[in-house]
Image (cartoon, rainbow, N blue to C red):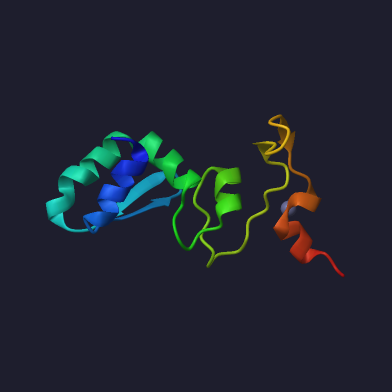
Length: 109
Ligand SMILES: [Zn+2]
């Protein structure tokens, strides 16, 4: 089962899966303990999948850039200085303040 399938199964089983720092936090019914254990056994893969597809309530771009889920109810994080792979060029590049929504927000008009 891929990490994405595991997460889908967990959500179907009523589990709430999220990250707290580098930890994987799983809440839900005892009956879904087998799926919870499977998630924990593949923690690194699951954390990577959560960053790739953080689910509703998260900034997709920032989550992928920072490789961790970034919730929308917090402040938009600075992504300037992060190294990403260019969507068009396919080459690694370093994000500049002009690419960063958090930098743009603080700038006077
Ligand atoms: Zn910034």
